[in-house]
Image (cartoon, rainbow, N blue to C red; front, side, top):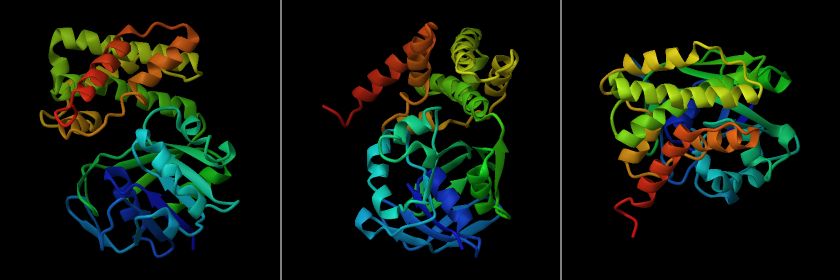
Length: 296
């Protein structure tokens, strides 16, 4: 029976922990800021209920086979504080976060060969401690390897699909190109259908084209039609649909700007690739985050 610790039971972490806990093969512990008695995942036509062990302090952690990090990208230090208690030499750490710098974020805290970057496509929202609403099908991707196969096996028979990718660089950059466009929604506080406006459509094209250029420089195989597909998806999205960056800004939470558009700017600079549109979005979102009403 694999022992699994999920750090960060927010939208993604709560849904992942809820599905993992459905299998009698898994022994699940949840590391949270606020404890709760039951984990409830509402998936529309079904409600998943489970009672994993929930702990709120790293001193309560005991060694596990797997650590799944599902915190926001800016919570690296607080997530890493759990590693000593959960880890033994054979413990593997899967990083379920946005962006393309999963290993770079956590390599100061654990050897890189124990880290597995995971691409996450799991629409969900946390409604209360221990309660998550899953809004669509869940998909995770991991690099094809022995560890990747073991990770996929954790979810066998559950409601989250895991694919093993031969080219993880392309998988992560394709997702980052999509996330880059989402910053427009966060900046305008408008659903992505705002891209129906010709000026916004042109701006979105430029944002994503910059991300494609940087991704290709990093070795990602991104086809010429990706920009058009992302624009089409934005224009056809539901009027009420908002992405996680938009939702975080509405809620007054910190933003993952640096791991998304900031990474495109930072890595582009390393390759000598100009990224002015992404830099503009980073500046705008950093400015509005710095002037939240709860800040002096």
